Length: 357
Image (cartoon, rainbow, N blue to C red):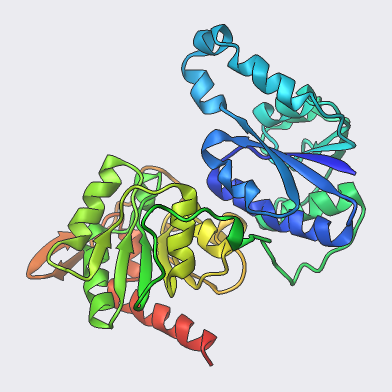
């Protein structure tokens, strides 16, 4: 049976689909998957042994210059690749108009979520068949339910396996196995309100290195690189990594003892690798889309207005200030004051200690 998965973005959403692929592989030995995904995330599906072909799409880039895309025939090449196979089933696991359009563009029976349980109800116009899955379920469980109903098998919801074959992850140039204890700080995220304060990160780095760990700081944008350099100041046990591919980051995460992260797609990568991870949530709620799986601990804000799920902080109460290295600073957004560096490190060590018992 040949099945096409359409889950194009974002990184966290793509990773959320992997456990459903594992479920299907275990239940139906005859299934072979292909996967349409944004070019920036094409590495991720290739890590799963049940995925034979990854078909990159460049919707984000194409939107910036539609005329150029048409003139250089790039879209037509994608369409030819997509339509070169007659699929038994096409699963739109994303539920957006763009993913619905790609699903219908392919050759095969298209299925997706119903208009009452989908992010963009207009996407259902592209489907031949729909299934209702409750909004109250975590995103991982919603995809697992969709796959199990479409492919007619049962799975154990208490067991979670992302199915990542680490031997398929390419190692970056110069990469070597660790020689000491290491922790990765995933400090970069999209919304301004999801950022843990820089001074908190710097304080946490000092706590970590005093405890005998080397701290690794990845980055993806110039702003994130500046933050990483600030966190690493005056601490020779903190390393600002070179810019990495997703495979490179996966290798560093895999070799670490654990991860401390904000609400970011890379946190889901750590979860997929079953790496012990503390995830820090201020304005967002991990209940429906937080890191999911083994060895995951969420620290949520106790502030009355959290989680507000807003990109701009609307807090109007008294300000929260902290002091580090002789300097006072405002905790912004204040919802992160619920969990300072000392407590975060205590929770991290406790998580590692529980795994080693």
